[in-house]
Length: 310
Image 1 (tube, one colour):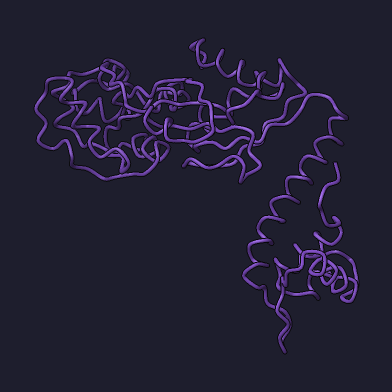
Image 2: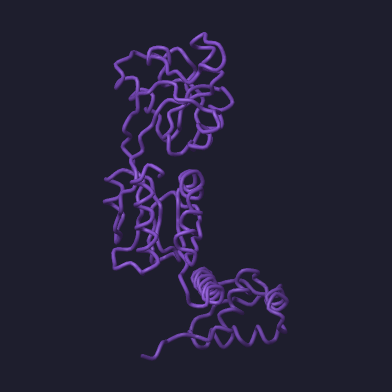
């Protein structure tokens, strides 16, 4: 089948000129003459039948069509370059995955486990970028996404399949010093949890995206807590973890995201009463037969999540 595509050289010239809105700077970047860049873009415009740049006395300015096409071409060239480098690096073996991920889960749960993946599947490389909201896979170069959301949010994401990994259970955690002071204990005994009633008297750290979390936790514990909505608010679990580590208060955090802090003794479980959150962590991928490298990664990820090492 004959593909209706312009030359790669013309697209590369156009993308550089669109990014700089300058033929001169594009020519410098590509080690070409300005006239060569101009000829390539003129040929591209004639081939498309669309004006991409408007010529002015001071240079060139993108047309609305040029702006839209420039974004698409930049994304396509970036993906082509990435895939080309992957083939060159791996000489056809294994493969690479481009993964979109919520930041805290990627940083604190996935990345520490990637050495296990490398040991089992040394020819698989995982590239990770941050995305916190649903997107259309057709508009990106991502192969899959690690997403935190409710079942209702997953159901509204069109054209995907979802693999449940972990539920987002949360527990109250704080620094050992804060618990020692609250329970009037001597240092070294802070690992002993305290009753839920005691937490109602301690400073509480809030997460701005879950403003009712403490209220729900105290309700589940059967404890009245008039100050359940009080306290400084932080957007990310990673921010809550740092604030709790420095003794600013008690935070509700999934234990799977603070394994390192708990192992180092920087955070302790303040009250051994977890709360099942509405959200869970999923591996999201296009609703089609996955390529072999994604299927292998998905199976490994499921094993990690089910093993408790995950």
